[in-house]
Image 1 (cartoon, one colour):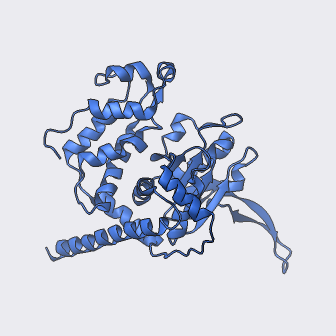
Image 2 (cartoon, one colour; image 1 turned 90 degrees about the horizontal axis):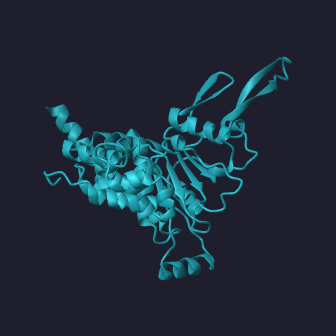
Image 3 (cartoon, one colour; image 1 turned 120 degrees about the vertical axis):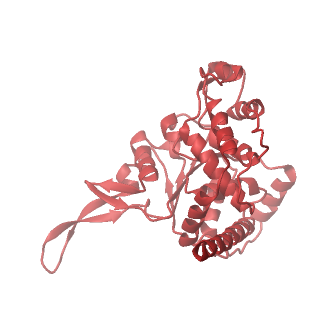
Length: 340
C-alpha cells in the first residue's frame, strides 16, 4: 500500500513537471515564433509520445525555424539534414572508413557516425531526396537504430524526427508513399498568419535581436514524460470512439459513410487508432488531466488522419481536401453515450 501511494505521489510530481515543462517551452518558443501555439502543442504531443512529425506548408511560413527553435529550447542534441537529390543513405547514417594505427601500421575499419546520431533530427524537404535515402531515415525512425555493413548501431534516446515538405513545386521531387507516410504520427499543417501577427513577425525580424533560451527540459525528462503518458488511462468508450472514427475513414466497409465511398481511395490504418489514443493521453496530461476525453480525440484527428486518407479523382475534381473529409467524419461518427 505504501509503495502504491509513493508511486502516485511520484506521478503527481511528474505530471506537475510535464505541465511546467510545456509552459516553459511555449514561453521560450514565443520569443521567436509568433501565433503558432497550436502547432507547437502538436509538436510537444508527438515529442511526449515518442512519435515523429511531418510539417507541411508553403515556403516562408517558418517551418524550419519552428523546428530549430523547439530544438534550441530543449537540452537535447540537434542535427539538420538538408535533403537533396544526390544525398546517399551513408550520408545520413554514417559509414565505415579505414583507419591506420600509426604506431603499429595496422589498418582497421572505423565507423564514423552520420547526422542521424542526435536526439532531434530536422529532415528538411524530405521529398527532395530519392526513395533509397528516404527509406534509410524511415528505418531509423521505426527501429531506433541503423545498420551499416551488417553491424547495428543504436541511436540516442529520445530520438525524434521532424521532416518538412513543400506542397508546391513538386517537379523533380520524390513524394513519400502512403506506407512510409504512415510512420509519421502527425502531419502538422502550418498556414498563413493573420495581418496583425504578420506585422508582429515583420517588426521582430527586421530589427536587432539578442535572444537567449532557458533550457530546462532534458532527455531523461522527455523519456519520463513518455512513460507517464502511457500510464494515463483511457475509458473503453473513448478508445472505441477513436477506433470507429478511424474505421469510418475506410471505404467499402460496413461503417463507411457515403462521402467516404465517394471521395476516398484508401483510409487510415491501425497506426492511426494507436496514435489518436496516445496523442490524446499526452494532450490530457498537458492540460493537467489524468483522463482522456472525446474532445482530445477530435482535436488530434486532423494531424493524425490528414496524411493517412488517400483521396481519389472525384475529390480532386470537386476540390475536396483531406481536412474537409475529416470534419465530415467527426460530424458523422456519434459520441459515446457515456459523454466522456
